[in-house]
Length: 139
Image (cartoon, rainbow, N blue to C red):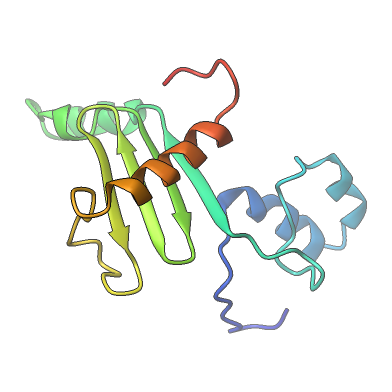
């Protein structure tokens, strides 16, 4: 792909390494990547319908903030978090306060939580998160 190309496809951080390897001409190394990881330079790559992410606990960031700002209250960020983003909707699950649901088409800045208005959709997306996580993983 050339410079300045903008794609609307859903991508994930797991795509960075295979994309760099591909751009460097090290395509043979791509066979060692997890199946879900794809080079973004591959014109044959399948489009994703969803991407997932997690943050177990940002301990390094919390330590740094406490070092820079003694007395820093980390309670707002010190919790497990999981996210599922589809083409239109995004569900964020937080261990400390449940879930948040956003319609990115009408609310790209995630200012209006739709969880109460659309509990069925939130439940379906949460089921996708649960199915995506490895069996036996801590919740």
